[in-house]
Amino acid sequence: MNELHYLELHELSLLIRSGKLSPVEVTEAQLARIEALDGRLHSYAQVTAERALEQAREAERELARGHCRSPLHGIPLAFKDLLHTAGVVTAAGMPLRRDFIPREDATVVARLREAGSVMLGKLQMTEGAFAIHHPDIVAPNNPWHAGHWAGASSSGCGVATAAGLCYASLGSDTGGSIRFPCAANGLTGLKPTWGRVSRHGSFELAASLDHIGPITRSARDALFLLSSIAGHDPADPTSLPSVCLQVDSLEGSFQGLRVGVDEQWISDGVDPLIQQALSQVLGIIQAGGGKLHRVRMPDTRAVSANWESHCGVQTALAHASTYPRRAAEYGPALSRLIDGGRALSGMDYQRILLDGQRFHGELEALLKDIDLLLAPVQPYAAPSHEQLANLAQDPEANRRLIQFTAPFNVSGHPCLSLPCGFTAEGLPIGCQFIAGKGAEALLCRAGMALQSVTDWHKVRPTGF
Image (cartoon, rainbow, N blue to C red; front, side):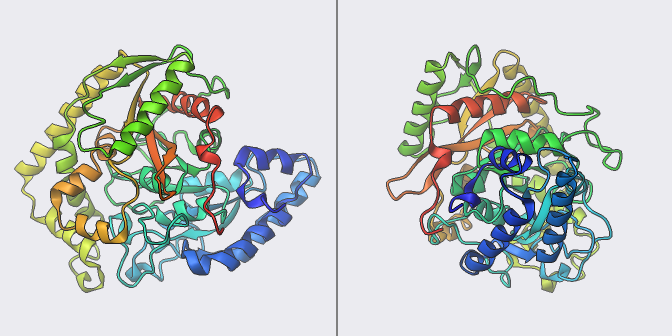
């Protein structure tokens, strides 16, 4: 029971369905843990204790009658605060939205509610899901080291999931904001194919770049959660027409997988420690029967350099009803992004779109000959807050930070981020697999294979 809060989703599901644990017991333990620890971590924007207990009691009654809605029945989860929750404030990290109460759930929230999960609350995030928290918001603290970055906009998701304040969470990723917090907090996160998961009822940062996906403690759990939220949604015309996620096997294996490696791309400007970790992962892949293919990655410089302008135009549109009319209520980072988007010419934006289409086409061609690409999540471990402040003043440093994440938001290809080691100071580091569109199950198969022979994903931050 002392380690109850660190169980993986699939482990907890078996215990609940067998009757060894009750949803109420588990939910009460999570709420007590949040109350005891989140004053130090600041991961929650709002805890919905009464709703959580009500949902847990209902789950317990249903399970006692032999009615199991899904493997997630009775499991406590939490949501990034840009996902609409009926009757519960959804502020998206913005003080000007502190009184916004949606009338209906986001599609992903509704699907998990229908699956019988328990909502613990809403998780803190950067302002509008861009890079920096609003000055009036207390940023979440990385449980591995409070002096280091907790990982971009889904920071609350990463912190709460890593510290055992929820069993998993739903975040969003527009330039890396599922993958960055996973790398910073020792977690496994899946940015699905664009359109695989409905965005209906989520606050936009940039519509064509936004992805919603799971932040979990293992690749198995990422697939476990994705299977409940994926699928076509009539309320989101951009969602893919597939009815459900096709999962052929829950067994991890590298056998026969063709894994592409561009040694220059994954080493240029990348910390030697990250390079060593990737080399170790490559050795594990080969030992497991995977085949390494030397490839040449399409140039990512233009799409990563263009990302902020690409995002800014769409963000300006998303905020048109409140910006510039209420510009004084915005923080400096989000204001700068929107101002840049509003100032960009149509011709310059078209050049950005063409660069993105070129990258997409070249990546599609590359992925015809391989199953997966291996890459870092970022060129170094989670930076200190001081280093992060310096990054904000250097456009080229920002481009390097997102060079392994943002291009796949532009192209819409799925990525699985997972732990692959630690720094000398004990900070987690992450790698990612990238696959063809619709190949989330293949990504998770590779992730499960890696995690079946390593224990990086099972190490927890001390003191929590």
